[in-house]
Length: 342
Image (tube, rainbow, N blue to C red; front, side):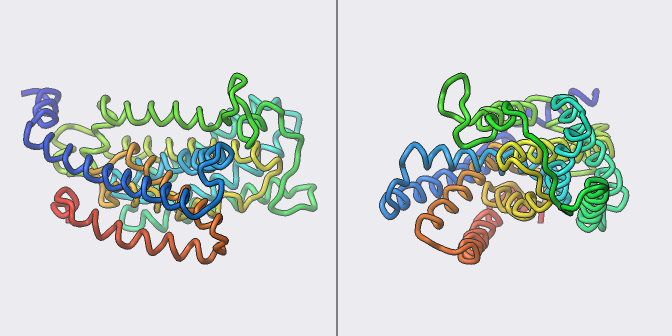
């Protein structure tokens, strides 16, 4: 029996497919119910919560978090966490203006940033794979090294440490600005970018050998090895994707803010993890998916908008979000596919 026939039989096993479908649908149902509850609560308590302007603002902020959460979701499906994401975001955010000031055309500069993000991600993946017992700290160390090196480079000849300024191309500002338009429609193009990439990621994860290999590795390394799935290649590729998505988020955030700031990625250190957890993806690997993370992103963003509308401080918002994560983890931990992995 060939490897491909074995994998096909594993994928098509009726009991397994039914079990996974019920578990995934239950997580999505919980996330959807929570999102609806928050929207209703906002509509009843905050004036203008359902206005088009507020909806556009929510989608804009959700798009940045959603793009940053793509890599975190894929790494989580392998059973890991990538703490370098916010540092790559900050590094890309200050490096791009410096490249523009050096006379590099905007399109070429962005390609360089994305390529560097992929290189950093692949290095992070290789190191994390080799030292899996310390993978969490390894990714944090890589993040510190990258952002530190970028700050040193951008600070040469500049009096603004941690900041970088350059005329931002109008098209990049339009992509990420609140008032940006997509073919004349009052929708920030970054939201469309997030939608397109999200659909592509969901399709790849469900319908390709690479996507199914990620689930296989996260679910059982022994089974994945027998299916001849290369663990090191998958681990490296997933972290490479995380690096690219982090760099892209940093680039788009430059269009949003108009100036580079190294700390722009700090809020994404744990918000990406929170989005993954609230969406129901198992941090143990092998269960969940980016579609569920999209729900988690929307829940977090709508909740933040609601708390801001109620006049709650940032510290209060963090406390409420923390109190939300605890019961969500407790609920998802009782789902069969997570209990079986434990």
